Amino acid sequence: MRIVNLKVNGVGKTFIARPETTLLLALREQLGLTGAKRGCAQGACGSCTVLLEGEPVVSCLVPAVTVDGADIATVEGLADGPALSHVQQAFLDGFATQCGFCTPGMIMSAEALLDRNPDPTRDEVNEAISGNVCRCTGYEPIVSAILDAAVRRREGAKL
Amino acid sequence: MTLLRGRGYASVNYPTGMNLGGDPSQALIHATTMGGFVISLSSVDLGQGLKTVVAQCAAETLGMPMENVIVDTADTDTGPHCMGTFASRGTHRIGNAVIMAAREAREVMLAVAADELEVDAGDLETDGTGFVRLKGSPATEIHIQDITLAAHFKQGKTISGRGIFLKERNYPVPETGEMDPDSCQAHACTVAEVEVDDETGIVTVLSLHNAYEIGRALNPAMAAQQVEGGGWMGVSHAVFESTEPYYPASRDHGPVDFCEYLMPGPAEIPVQSSVILERPASNGPFGAKGIGEMTANAPIPAIANAIFDACGVRLTTMPFTPESILRGLDALRA
Image (cartoon, one colour):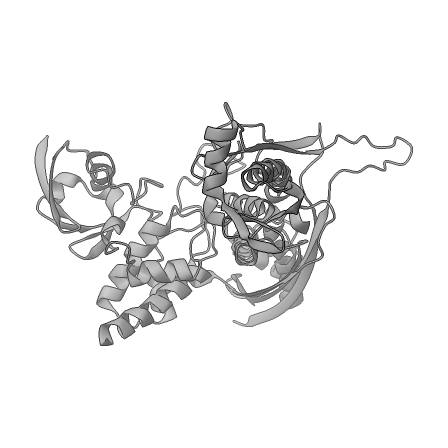
């Protein structure tokens, strides 16, 4: 058991972790942030994706004790009050969710992509979300929403 | 190596619901003191959009805004009975039950409003924004919040309603086999375009063009999403999802994760175009038929036909794996 300190969505958090406590479990059960979902629990479905120092990771495979002191971003931290992030708003407007289980992971993968590549091609979007499984939508609305979000972010940045 | 292109089509007639021992679903609705209408169901929304569609049905029938409708899909121990959300029955069966419940609740709502306004309930109408008003004299109106408060604290009434839709059990006529197994049928056709690599045997689905006749599309955006999400599942069944090489020879070592049990990712999806045709069903909620499972049906035989058109290999077992394509090509050359 170890005390772990994280900066989650900009706020300092402290909790006790066992060696086998994953980052996902700590977020969901100890910090009450249930946005990241536990899908396959073996790193294959992407529904638990969060950003670790800005990089997307499958939090079900990250032991919490190994990321002491790290900066974590989850879907809960994206909206600024009632104002959604560009990616979230594009998902909403583009009807890119159905059952919603993959959505938080998809959105975090998309945010990470657009942070490092503000003007991605469709192929680059496909690659960025290739680790996120969706069983409902057929992916097309998701890919289109991410491309739409890229435009919104670029235009928003100009203002 | 040659990339062979082909086109194929297939159509599907899909019955809404089922008829084994009869096919019922129930709904209850009651007003809160704040002017909300709670719909109690045992039916599950697992992402198909049932909550949205039944809220639309209730709002339309009550004449109230969607925001006033609260859908509680409680649980099967305590809720009104539902056979379940399967057999593409949810919108049709549960939608009909909700409409029936909402009609009864609307009658009570209008009766309470009539008492408050000192008019005849038959002269009242809803304006869709939350007010009940006198026909031809819109200034004589009362808001739903005041109606429910009056019902609860003054008149001592529950604004509530009960609904059920039952597709009755139907037995076949022994002599002819004739029976009435379902309540309505939806129809669809898909045209698939594929590319077959005659060296690797890999099939790429390039496009799916879908036409669906589904009665009335209660929520066109969700209907289109159902068609295209189902189209993706059809592609997945047709050329990806396989339990080979282990199953059925052995059940001990089948695919255990998404690395072994493959499904198409965003890079493997075909271009899709979809058209919704509306011929309302007489027994459907506002004319709707079921559109659920059928969306994954037509793409599969359409892809099989497109493979035949591309390379002459006729496959009848899913999925259409590279191995089955190559064995088929070998057989044609022999």
